[in-house]
Length: 136
Image 1 (cartoon, one colour):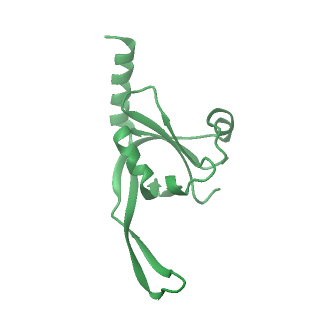
Image 2: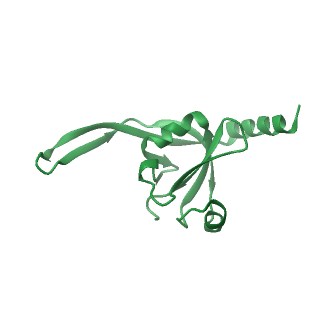
Image 3: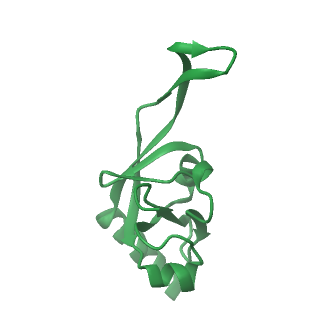
């Protein structure tokens, strides 16, 4: 058994034991509200579907590591998560992301490096850097 196989099995075990739940809300119906105005195209209500639960490993990121290592632009409230590759598309298409009762920027609203998707050294896992909505 090679060193790479051992480290992959060790990471798989840690991922199973230490992962948290992230709630990913996908887009639901966009309906007309009571004060809908067809001339201004306003008065819509956006509803999200029930959340999907995704297992993630989380790590808080310091401002120093964001600036020098990951080249992010926000300085506080960032979180690095590691998740399975099959769940990355859920994060890209989400309308709302909640981890530990904190809301984070979603992929489509992430202007200025507030969401970064990076590969990891482990097979079938990716790293995503998220920024909290209430900070920056």
